[in-house]
Image (cartoon, rainbow, N blue to C red; front, side, top):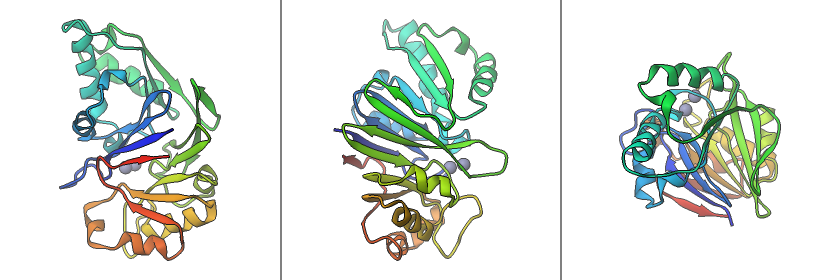
Length: 252
Ligand SMILES: [Zn+2]
Ligand SMILES: [Zn+2]
């Protein structure tokens, strides 16, 4: 069985939601993105944060990344001064990941000297495995000149897709093809579209074209709370639609 827990369904600054972050439990414990306030929600799940072995980033806009710094600093203190141990940590992300972390780690005090193994892996459009979990990254279109990934995760005969931040694009439809559950960037309502994100109507369109099982709408900007995004997505998608909420857990 695979379990998805939404750690954050909002964006950078949002009054009631943390930014992007998802906990995925298969034979491994993975995180998809690690945006602001998602670490606090991770603590609320009651799971041991030191058991996370893989963090997969879609891109490095701060709303998908910034709690990683706090998390890593804590992991260093835990292993250096509190007698803790933890498994190696593998950080996976789009093109530029190695350069990004080299710069960050050489600038932040102590980060180069963590007492546990840290690996960085740049991925593009090629599948790989983590134990019995299959991960398929796919390049999606978000902002210009930025390599952004969506991820498809397959385990125990089930598949889930996460769009990361994405516009409507064929690549996203292919990423989501026939998945049991897709978590899509629903930044805006159909009446207030943005050039770099999906809107609720397009989330429904992607869900229909990809033939998915259940659709989870997420990554809401504050303005989007004023609109009925479920209804807007439902205009093109007849399947089950969930409006994402922080700490919601979905089994598949
Ligand atoms: Zn972004
Ligand atoms: Zn974002």
